[in-house]
Each structure stands twice: as C-alpha cells, then as structure tokens.
Length: 168
Image (cartoon, rainbow, N blue to C red; front, side, top):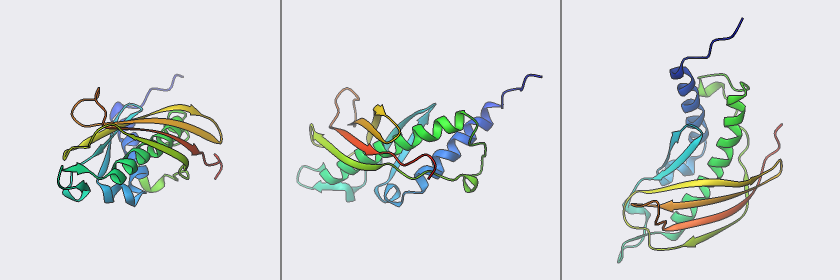
C-alpha cells in the first residue's frame, strides 16, 4: 500500500515550528529584532529598523557591529537550518510541537570577514546566506545584506564555521 503524502498545512506547520524553535533558542536574535522569512528551504533574514541600531546619528547609519552581527547570525541560522531541513525531509524529525524538538548545537564561527559597501540606512535590512561548502566538520558561507534593492547590497560577509558533530 502506498503511503499518502501529508497535507501541505501539516508539513508547513512542522517546518514553521522547527524554524521557530531554532530562532527562539537564540536570545541575541530577539535582542536585535531579527526574524526569518521561510520560502521552502530558503531563508531571508529581516533586521527590523529600530533607532537603537543606529551607530552614527549624524548620517544616520546602522552601527557596523549590528551589521556584522546581522550577517553572522544569518550565516549561522542558515547553516543550522540546512542541517535541520535535511533531517526534516528525511523523516527524522516528525513533530509539530517545538517542545518535542531537540535542536542540534549551533555552528561555531572560525572567522568572518565583513565588507561594508555603503552605509546602512535607517530602515529594514534583509540578508540571505549561500552555503558555498559544507562538510562534516567545516562550512563556508557567503552572506549579502541589502535594504531597498537586492542588487545593491550595503554589506556582505564571508565566513568559515566549525560544524558540530551530528551525534551531539
């Protein structure tokens, strides 16, 4: 007998619960006001504008440390999401309740280089990470951050991360 696929609402709810559990487990994400928009397996990070994030009130411009943290957070969450996504699609994770989900340890930053291409304006910012290499122990990620026009990034980053062991 062929197993019928689950209704799309149940699959979507499970994916959203998993992403919520992942993001909710990192207090710094809430502190900065970062959220994640999920479309399939692709994540877009959203840094909601807040006056507290301005580093230079004379311009005004987003603080460079906030920009770097935003890009690094996007990379780490994207790496973790990629691992969780493969487990979810393989049926290893099969719950809709975030309390039942055991989240893996987060990747650790080895190094990250941020290129500030222009001032971050006082408005929402967006970022997407692309995993350029992912192995059992090491991953490389490229992140672009933009505001009004995706083709005009205000910052980009390249980072290398130590991946946690699969069993712990």
